[in-house]
Image 1 (spheres, rainbow, N blue to C red):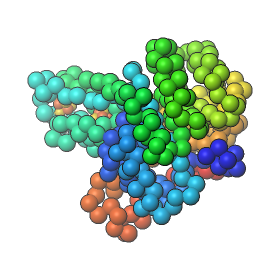
Image 2 (cartoon, rainbow, N blue to C red):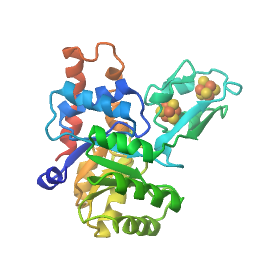
Image 3 (cartoon, rainbow, N blue to C red):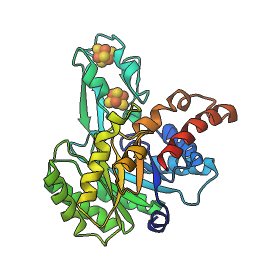
Image 4 (cartoon, protein in one colour):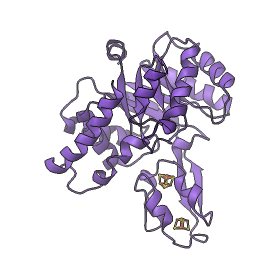
Length: 314
Ligand code: SF4
Ligand code: SF4
């Protein structure tokens, strides 16, 4: 993976969702975006999901230069929270069914494996009937299994305010995996100074240029395709760039088809763009269809995905 990154000006990473535990979704996202030119696929740290992503790559017919990154969230990380509806408070208005970006609410009930923890439903429920609940994993058990199945990168979502938790997970990841690591970090809980001091400490364990910093503007905020939406993602990348760390910078958290253009206008020296919410949203009408792999349907979705990848690789 390092060689591939070195040899390419920019890469496109498709974020399936660190909390997306739906095998069908992940297989289809991976198949479609692999065919569209994405090279890195970010999935949740679960063996079943890794299997699904590998099947997606196989279905795309492209296995060379395709890399799978498993994302590890931690307590307090919105990416791994799950929505829970309190039926006593729910008046069954149906509002949340329509705003969920991942089709994870059907008939006022959450399909847990599809919930990506974006909080849109809980923020908009007028009855305060939805709460977000953390879902942690035992890394010492899961990671060795994933490594034995074959992965290319492990990403830690290092946004929590709980320093001890970060160091513990970072140690476990470094112990079990000797390939490329990625650190996804944002400023929601931490200020600029804390972000940089945390990253510097994490990098003490790393050989130069074996780490990606995924500069997360505003996590899971990229559902609109405007410059304003992607502004914080580019701003966060600039903060990492100015610190001159021996890392590759990926822009994320509010990314869309405008990100590459804005990053270039702002002279950001980035290695790639990671897109989740927006990349999934634009193909949403196709992804749950029973005839998804019908060439007519697949090719319509493929054209949309290809345009986004092309605009991101300028
Ligand atoms: S928006 Fe709230 S009240 Fe309405 S269906 Fe959803 S959970 Fe129930
Ligand atoms: S709106 Fe977001 S948090 Fe709520 S169920 Fe859908 S994916 Fe989960």
